[in-house]
Image: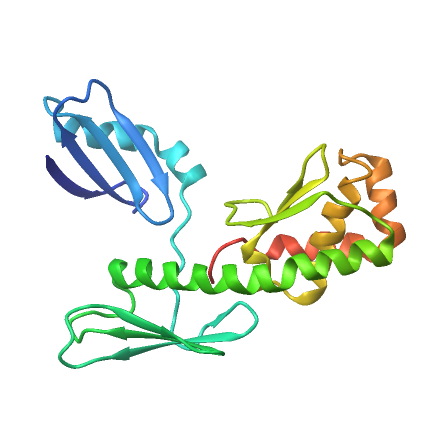
Length: 232
């Protein structure tokens, strides 16, 4: 496999891969891996670069700059993350305490290195998942009882764009990144999904039901738009 890194016209970093066996071009865009173009071995890099610049509108629409987890950043409700350089170590390691995540780095790595960030995000996801499993099902049950709703099951998952969902069988799925939200917005999402157990569509009746429970539903709806299910 042959690889070339380039910078596109709008200053996006991109990587072009030539792979034997491919018969067509494959473009992927993600926050972690950035812009990646895989193409047949016989296609020139010049053509690949022109192809990427031609698809710049698509790339801008789907590209989100990967967030950087920084020192002293709060993860979820309970943990602060710290990076410590460790002499004599060649590997990135970690330790999770009751209220702290420690990432130990070899001296040749910095916080912003991709390998460090990817490792750190994996650890942070585990911490968020644990917090979410301990808090969200319990809080959902409390709200359902107080508001006289019923649901069938609840699952905690890492979702890319949604805070939660509810299907026709009253099975609720909640995003583990809810643990990064203020408590009032967590309750807003939980009540939102519980309301879907009665009204599945986002129609007038759904928002009327929500407003009866949360008189400030409009402000909460706008406030949650300031947050994304990711770090940072």
